[in-house]
Image (cartoon, rainbow, N blue to C red; front, side, top):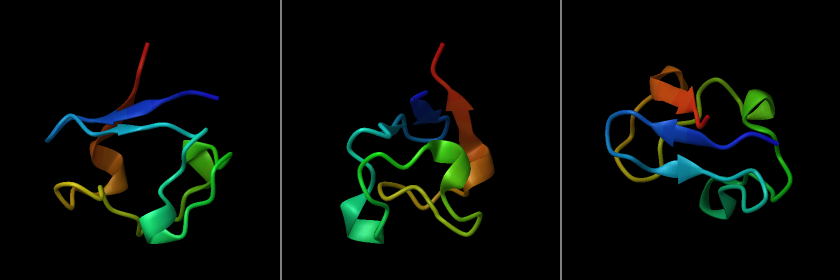
Length: 53
């Protein structure tokens, strides 16, 4: 599964970890996160993330 990084603050979403504070379970691919999810660090919208190459 691909990791994604917030282009605003640098937060990296790791699907193996998820985002438990936002009820995103470990093992959840970025593509399956709800569209209204925001960066837990800076509040940027999901479209402000880019895949880590």
